Amino acid sequence: MILFYNPVSSPSRKPVMPLALLAVGAMLEGWEDYRIIDGNLVPQGLAALRQAIVETGADILCLTVMPGPQLTDAVPICKALKAEFPSLIIVWGGYFPTLHGQILMREPYVDYLFRGHCELAFSDFVRKIRAGEDVTGLPGLGWRDAEGAVHLNPKPPVPDINALPDFPYHRVDMDVYARPSFLGSRTMAHHASYGCPFQCNFCAVVHKVNGRYSAQTAERAAAVVERLVRDHGATAVEFYDNNFFVNEARCAEFAERITPLGIGWWGFGRADTMLKFSDDTWTKLSRSGLKMVFMGAESGDAAMLERMNKGGKQDGNTILAVAEKMRRFGVVPEMSFIIGNPPDPEKDAENTIQFIRMLKNVNPATEIVIYIYSPVPVEGAMSQEAEAAGFEYPKDVTTWTEAKWEKFAQHLSSDLPWMNDRIRRKIANFQRVLHARYPTITDTRLGGIGRVALRVLASWRYRAQFYDFPVELRLLNKLFPHRRPEIQGF
Image (cartoon, rainbow, N blue to C red; front, side):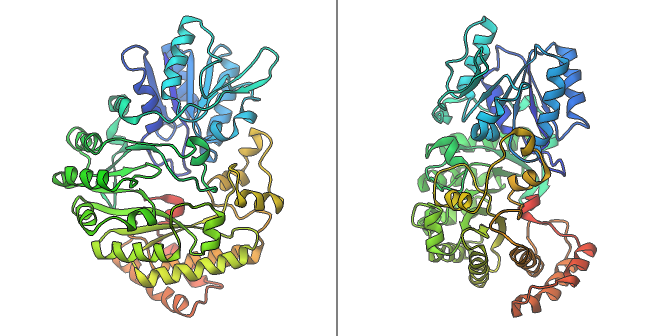
């Protein structure tokens, strides 16, 4: 018996379908029993896992772990379980082991880790463990030899997603993961592709897939959506793909196939790619129920985008053009920006603020998500400038679990060497005014009175570009609390 654990993913414990665990579990169907335990759904993860180990005799525990809340939850749990069940084999996979495997394998409570996409390698791992065979040659595996030296095997290639089985939805309570959102009353999630063909040097996906990309065919992706609608009552779907809209023909065919289902949907894309989509394709996307596309605008400054190695042909004009195009087809652009970048964070912040204002003039419906720049261990100008300013990653897992680094992992930390209090206040105050002047449409709980009140009080500030000391907006936020997309999603 194998236990899969999905650590607590956010302070709110919002249930997010554990797609990574379903993907790995799908490879075990029919020959190895397993159980998925979601830390977001149980009062205490440690107690739930301890009880499951005693009940089932499970001898392997696997976790998928991202830095931030998941890491903070996973570390004490694994320490306690390893002390109580010394023979339990504990395996980590996901974002944190992929990027920080060397320090993780120094921890005695972790026996193995997998880096990158490990669906195929993990099933081989289980077979070899069961047969008493050597596992140390498996791709992506992190392990320790008899002397305690750490070894990290080369990552496996991104698998052909069309050769993998469908997710075993019967292993989880689908009703728990169906939630109301602005997309629909029962919003569910799916991954229709793996990886991304671009290599932006601020994005950790590069380290995981190195520009590789594999997408379900339009027919198969549409069949999954139809299954979610038919079998589980889905009225909307979020696609968690790193880049859903890579191939126009596939997107157009997919849109045509799901149009009769009458759902709402959302996904990730790129401004320069989607600007090239024909009006006919955009019409199909709109008719199919596409409500919003998340795009990494990052910056309106061409030089900054070049330093980010954004790739493609994206620049400020492209971002403005795709926002205008999406306005015509009734699809909302959700644009993220990375602000406060070294070596001159104050200038970068001012440039980004002015560009966001320009973008709002072109398409007022554009959703703006602002993140403080958080370096990732990918070679490039951005990380080099961060290191030159004095930035260093934690040298051990314990430090990674501190509150400062938990915020850093969520792109919420301004406690960075190149930042100062003046810049922090400038960014925070602008965000407060912007989100009050343009309350997000994803907030279904904010009523009409609250929206009008926020807009009226923020309008003069936004118009005058006076963001300092927004005391009245702080007070109004208490009366009409509203969603922060960069923190809460939707």
